[in-house]
Length: 188
Ligand code: PNS
Image (tube, rainbow, N blue to C red; front, top):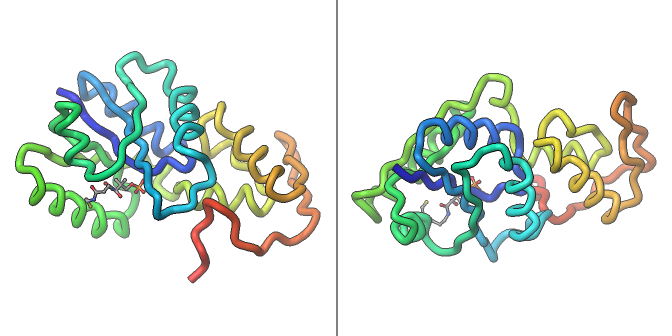
C-alpha cells in the first residue's frame, strides 16, 4: 500500500523525519509530497525543500519526494495511493487534522487518513519554531535533519548579517531582529 505524506516542509524537521521513517516501515512506499502553495511566502523554494527532504531521507529506499498543487486527494488518486499520512503532535493539532481528514473524506471515499503520534521528544517541534529560533540567532542543529541546518543558517545569514552559531557556544546576537521575514508567521 502506498502512502502520501503531504505538507509544507518549510523546512523539514526531525518531527517530520520521524513520521517518514516510521511510515516507511508501515507502508510499501511513502511519497513525501511538498505542496506548491502560491498563497504562502516560504523561506525555501519547493525545489530547495524537495532537495532537503531527499538529502534527509537518502537512507530510506522506499521513500520518494515529489511536489503537487491543487487538492491532496486528487494528487493521491493520481499516484494511486489510498493513504494520507499525517503526524499528530499535541492536542491542538487534533482539531485541524480531524477537520482536514473529514474534508478529504467528503472529497474521496477511497482515501483514508492515517495519523502517527509524533514521538514525545519531537512533540513541541514545528517548522515555524525552527525558523523563529534561527532568525533570532539560536542553534537549530538538534531540531532538523543534519543536512538541512547549514541551509537554514545560510538563509538567515543572507537575509540579515548574523553570526552563524558554533556547535558548542551560545550564539551572539549582533542586533535585534524584529522584522517580518519570508517563511515566518506574522505575529498576531
Ligand atoms: O505542513 P502543513 O502546512 O500542515 O500541510 C498542510 C497540507 C498541505 C496537508 C494541507 O494544507 C493540504 O492538504 N493542502 C492541499 C489543499 C487541499 O487538499 N485542501 C483540502 C483538504 S483540507
